[in-house]
Image (cartoon, rainbow, N blue to C red; front, top):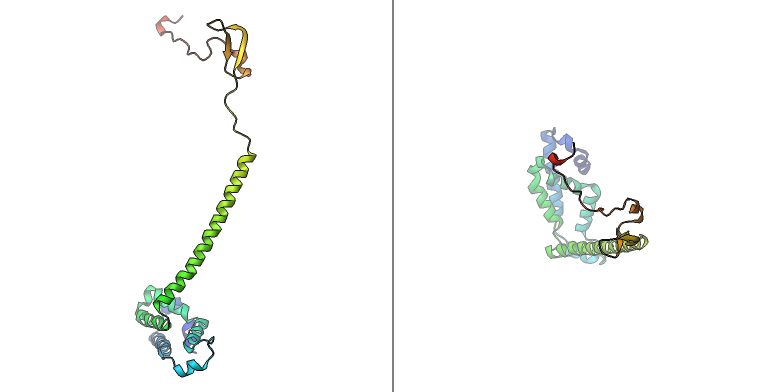
Length: 195
């Protein structure tokens, strides 16, 4: 009844809530705190099998099933619900009563370390695969074309000396060959240009 009453109220309706609703929320939070505050009974804990969950763990599981943990997270993070911050803090500290900080930190690091190691292995596998694909593409690609088109000797056409002309352009440019190829044209001053 009380769990349903608290979880049934949506966050939007809480802004228009009445005084009775505020009192009900406070009573429910105090009830949860008091239930979690009950110390463990050593005689009852020893009767169970080693693998059995303790009473405290079963209470925490019941809170999780009812959705109370989500409601506590909402109350802790909502800016307008700061009046419940101390109640929520006390409930959370009682939830972790049986665990030592070292165990909780080691548990978190173990999980994070395992996930980090798995992510690293997966990234390394992807990187190796990408390098292999890049090498395969490089082998399939034809070699880069050289801009050097070759050198040809033009027989029967003498250069400045007694040797034949050596032509360094492609053969398709041979038709436009002249001795002045590659030289800048001589600039004639404007006053000396023909009319």
